[in-house]
Length: 211
Image 1 (cartoon, rainbow, N blue to C red):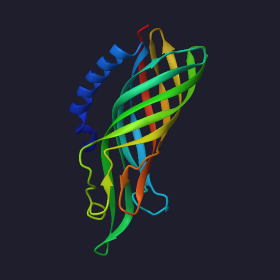
Image 2: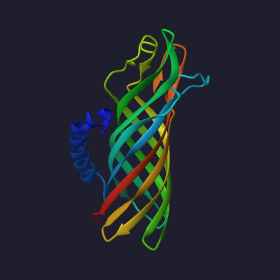
Image 3: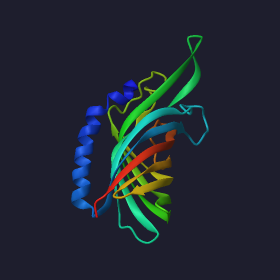
Image 4: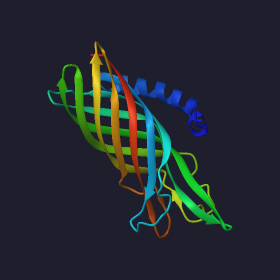
């Protein structure tokens, strides 16, 4: 397991317990679920400058619920941990080429509206909705190339689009979910330039029918 992933184990366990209690108490859920996956992310800017714009892998662990299911749609809400970042390739420092990366950890919350269709136990769905990332840790970039100029925002907002496939077996539901996350407000900012973040994720989802 990568070092940046293993360091989050204790935090994720605490977050899982808290989230399940919160969801079961406040949402009349039809499915409780856990999503576990990989996120590929990079930074973008309006001037299309090459600043941390190569993708790096991160980990995502979310718990949530599917609820208010109708004939052709339902709502899905999640809370959990997600990492975001980006890297520069072949930066020249002291006449040597090197790679520079920045990564930050977040508490991630989202709610999506999912339209779906069922066929012989298989459910195909597509969803869209808002998300919020709340920063865990330092607001300062690690590398000296960026730390004097950029500050990481304590939280940022974005939109999430997703498609997925699940299979229902008795009260259990398993499947795969692919998502695209686009930050709407800046993830980091200097006096002259704002950095947003685009991310792709692929997650394995497992749910249990409680109603």
